[in-house]
Amino acid sequence: MTLLYDPWLWYVSGIAIAFIMILLQLSGEKFGMSSNLRTLCCVCGTSF
Image (cartoon, rainbow, N blue to C red; front, side, top):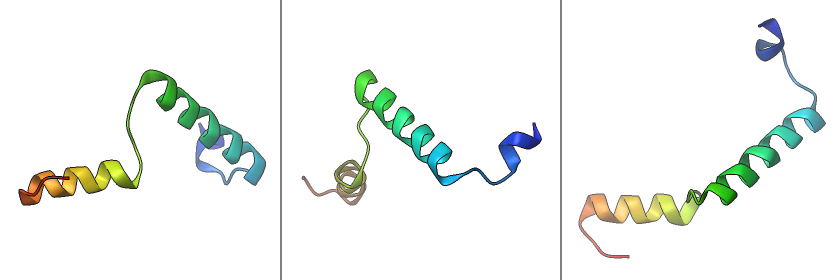
């Protein structure tokens, strides 16, 4: 469990982030700035 809390090497964390992003793309999840902007506009009552 201490492995998760210790600092990771940059290339290990980079591969992990890339793998998670690929999984999100394949599952059809939307993420990123445009998704956050769309949510913010819906909260404010404007259309995007």
